[in-house]
Length: 148
Image (cartoon, rainbow, N blue to C red):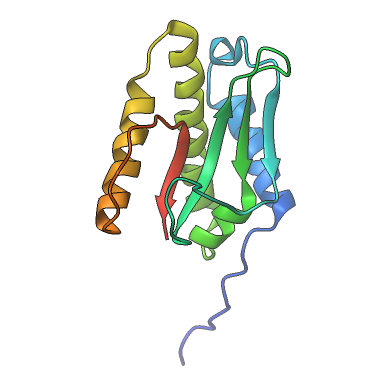
């Protein structure tokens, strides 16, 4: 007799929020949050990359620098669900850790006056545009992008 098979149930918003909270509390040293005065937010939205004219490129995370509102990080639950609909809890932990690490790197580099990750992100955008047969421009970006 075979084993019972149960469908993989996608992680809901609250489960992902709890995972993200645990990552924030446990996985990174307190020093990396210095100056991140606007906080870290999990948003329910699905966000497409505005620079890539294709519905197959999603923004998973975004670092926002603002002198008035404070520096903050947005993680897009809708994009996460779209790209990783069958992620297990363990997979979600690894994925969300990577997204947050990417955005924290933007934060740390910004505070240090560095732009290495912005350049890497721009290369990703330019490569995506070339794959789509679109002439690429020269604007810098700061979002973590993934293709569907």
